[in-house]
Length: 230
Length: 230
DNA sequence: GAAGTCGGACTTGTATGGTAGTAGGCCAAT
DNA sequence: ATTGGCCTACTACCATACAAGTCCGACTTC
Image (cartoon, rainbow over all chains, first blue to last red):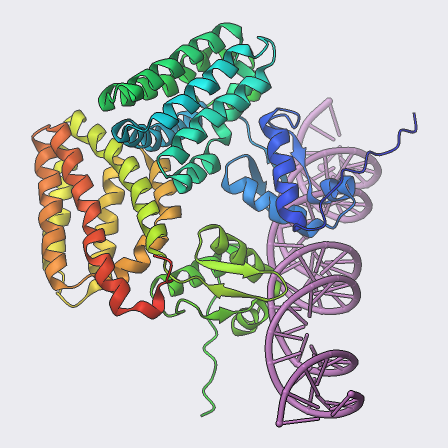
């Protein structure tokens, strides 16, 4: 089966390193590159028909996010998901987004409420089996909140740490949870619309803690993806 | 003046790239490398008697922190301090540390209070002209809080973003401010000791907002270090 | 004199070569 | 049968070479 290698198109207007980073990051989050898998600079470079150098830079960035572990002279491995790391990231994200939503709720801008309600309507229309589509809309929802508060930078920080959470979410979101998450979105927006700062904050914190509920279950059913240290 | 180049000792047991990163980061924060300065991979590499590759990796990491700006085929420049960026970082830091201190205040661990009070005593003994020494102790104080809450990861996130704040602090901390900052530390610890969760949070938020008070003044007196966009 | 053009000396980005170190298989010796 | 030692293949890390683009000054031309 001499299948022609699908030459992944790398843009010429952007440096290759960051592109490789995004490709690998996406593959790790979506478990195409499974936890524990061994990858090598040379192997990836061959696959993309580029040199090892940009791949190396991508590895470094992935290692900073904790998505891979680089062992000098030994190899580079996709990290297994650590429930402790997931909870660490969730804590940071909750802290930042709590202050963001407090600010939004305190500013009484009707346009934002309309925008968010429209997004919720779209979330309800997502087919129940299309997890990726819902996750994209969920991401957009939280991103919109941050932008509305004028906190684009804060969101960029969240983005740079949330990969660990996304890996779990990709494994865990099922239909039932989607419905509950949408309800929580509505609760957040209602609180914002009412100018209920404290209520909005609490609603958001509860929303982000939802992930913890399914985490033990996922860690057990997909034990090979998780490290054993808890 | 044929002065012998002081060969900075690079450890052999750690990769060179991260070491270069730390050296340059320190120099930028302490304004040895002044904002707007042009630096080049080759120049730094020659100075350290290494190749361009590890320097390049350091540049990439510095660029992610916003400490330098890499313009392909043109050059790399130490960024000027942006007051907007400083406020962005402060927002993130305040959000995270607020949740940390709430947790510490809610746990009623006497050992932590003792440790923090001892640190404050040491802060009072710092000579009033030794800014660097006080900043180190201040850093230790906040780091200790995070560790006490079991939030080592959260602190690592703060560390990776706070360079922008540190650059300003290095320019701004004078004797008067040191006294006020120590008072605020005491206020925070008192609230923790009393188990006053809300009070501890507010005290910490006020503490971290202190930097904003001197920011406009610094930005004016050292205008050449700041960008003009506000 | 002024404007346009060409060339060289930079810059970062990418590719490739070389080095030290690890892992694991194979073989020999006990 | 088990253990110890070599040897090959692989790894990441660093150094070096090459490529592509930018800037600036000198020269040419009008």
